[in-house]
Length: 221
Image (cartoon, rainbow, N blue to C red; front, side):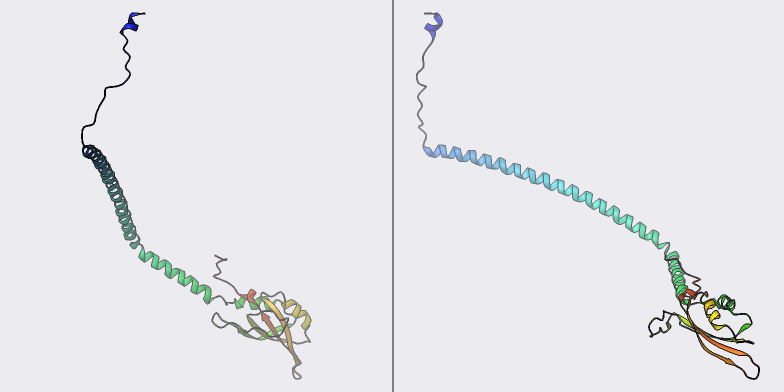
């Protein structure tokens, strides 16, 4: 047998130990350990709360700083805009005047041009003696026909024309159809003066909004 084998000691059991302390002592030790753990946990929670509170305070301070900056910027913009109140007032007045112009002349007809164009439709030897106009206005629209097949109109032009010979009324009616805003035209009467031999023709022509001059039209803007 080797030397190592001779020096080896076989230990079957450990050192016998006996707990002579009362159970209350061990319970106190366990309670103390639990209390230490609770204190450590409480300190950790308190530390977390302190850190969280500090972080919230910092974020709130930053948010308040940004709010103050925005409020200061808003005040500056309002002060800057106040410099242009007079300009904005003038712009509003200009817009109002433009709107008034559009409404005021919305039913305007350039009668010089219109009657000149009508004169070009007259048959040879026929002259216009009198013209009677009956049109609506921006605040009083022209009454519309109640009979079927009659189109919308904005006014009526009544002509009294004179001719030394019997005029070709159907041809004149056809020519009138080329007038701006023409809706329809009807002959009312054809009379001959037995003394002078002059014929008088009365024609009623209805006109639609194509006759308006639209001087201040905005083109849909």
